[in-house]
Image (cartoon, rainbow, N blue to C red; front, side, top):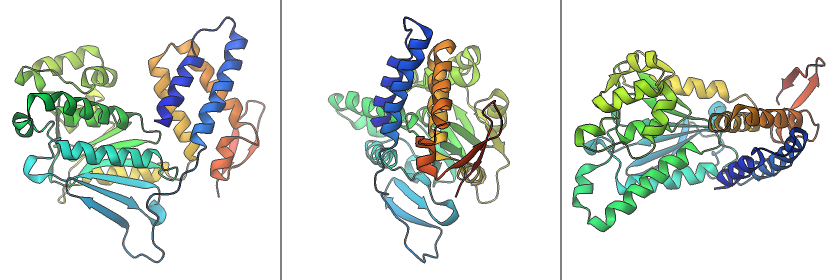
Length: 331
């Protein structure tokens, strides 16, 4: 919720002001407020044990496995969906568990990247659990749909990078969950689609907004109107996923590629990454002329010796040129 509050502050700041200089000044003030939100250090929820030989600690809760990687991978958290009989369909219990997991990592300043994957071979997530929904009383359906929609929205609002590792079918709500992540990686034989129109319904958890942003309006309409599922290779060609990888014998090629990518993120400044994500996300939502001032404000702040960037990373830097090109060394 802190990040959402920060976003509201930012959106208020980047509304048109009476003058350009005044607008930038107000934006800098609001950005400092947002930095204070991010600067709030909370205790690490699951510290690693000294001398542990296993690669990660695990907390299994039926439908969801939560793994906090340690060692050189410290800061990477893996959510593994585990409902084999239901093809990882989104149930009331899964929504509760994932919501709790999202809230936990959102408050954890030590989490660098979140990977969402499947513990079930050949399946990422088959969408809503329609069998469970059919058994619900009519009064239960509305609240369940609202909670599922809120979960996917909160996942999309996490401040750190999120990666969906799609090693199998991601259909309906399953693809909407993946679309809420910053980066999607699919195996070449994965199946992806918003296929709700086959059931005479429409995507209800952000798919009609996020899919057009990923692949363009016309293609999104075509796929949704046709209820078409495409493989990972085609998804890469359309821009729906960032990477399509050849599936391996163990069926986790997309997860392994996601882990490699998270390791590539890990050495970089965590606050800088979070602020870059926020700047990009806000840049998509508002007019370019006003979002540019946010980047200007962040760049100005990170030049300061007392910057929140340096405070959080132990950052040492030296200005190499008048153009503010910096050399960063982390320790």
